[in-house]
Image (cartoon, rainbow, N blue to C red; front, side, top):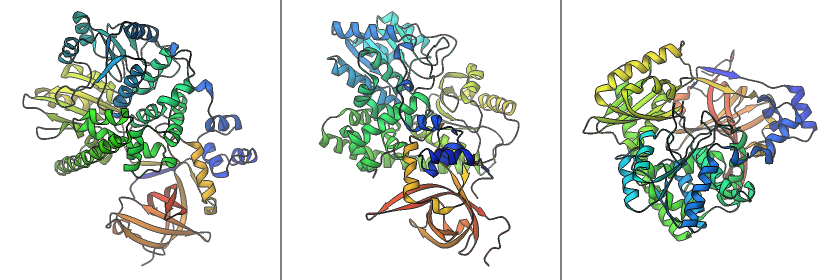
Length: 569
């Protein structure tokens, strides 16, 4: 078993029957009832677009001043620079803003700081360089909300600054021409969890106030969806509407770079969904930022030439292969260190040889593997470390960093993921303090718990048409997780190692219905089951296309022996 506990939520049977009678597919109806959408109006609004889901951009504090300053720059022919970030959210926001400003005739470029030598966000040398190059206006995307000193320096230089961001604010806001962030403490915006690219899109909407948002999403929706999913923003409310519009554009009319990326990832254009973006497309784009070549991904997003898109994508895929090799070797080193002593609280590790670009992935894997928050720090030769922080469970990482701010040179991010800059001399005290904060907040040891929507008592419901109905429930993601189900008391009829033994194919049978299954990253021997055993299977249903034949395949999440069943000897 991968999970110590299974929690099966269940559903209101009468409500599900009621939804079926109103024309909603049976399996989709059960799923929506398990998520609390028991009334027809709630269910119908969940699967259809509503104009009210996309809010008026002018409700964002500071956006009028931001739009006014950009219009003045456009009218005066000023050089504008978009100052972004090196993750997918920052890159898509940068590409969106540059694409829009260029469409208005602006002389506009993108500046993204180097991950290794500059770090996240605004910095003085970059601002001085941009001023010396003759830029009159800097528009930040996905960064800048904590840049108090940098904003003051920009003002001293005579460089105007418009900040658009979505990260947590501190006690004071930067003194800029305009500050747009739905998390501003004085914000009246009804939706606080837009991605950085979402905020950039709202600024474009404010600049194009006479054009409907739906029309602008036909131009930029793919970038908005890509950045929002990649940044693991909650897929609810306005984000859900923005992502759904973006997925339609990706399926119907993707820009050349994203078309090339879908081909490279083996994602058919018609089948692109949030999972394909999150697990296949976004990681490839992220590789450029992690490996210090962010401009490669930005150029892929901006190019209008199909041949150039293919060439750049091939280069990106090679870079991604090197990124995976680096990540794997560093994580193996972390595993070796952790074998020396099992952790009992937050994991804080540093090393001078580690490559900073993959620290975030390694931190996430470490947190997941040992079920504690993790901070992975790359230390430079001057004793300054840049670290990536990932939370686990209900621990609030950003709030914890605020309580450690006197030990940090800089920090920023969210409650689940953040970044720090720290002196080597402060790491031991930082480790101790964040452990104390953890013990104060988390009173019981975290356990690995699998949340399951409902039990499938009639396996015949898992047919092609019913599983296909889940496409109506997209997009899935943070806040709207894909459906997890369980079948209890199924009999194993077939076991086969595949993928060089790394994965396992199974067939299970219940009520005379046989179902094909695949258990990724699970070696057959490690499952400790045999043909004929009765098991409980937790899974997510998928449609599998192989050599022109479509079938239902269950992607197994976990397996455990069926209670009271006799095992085959």
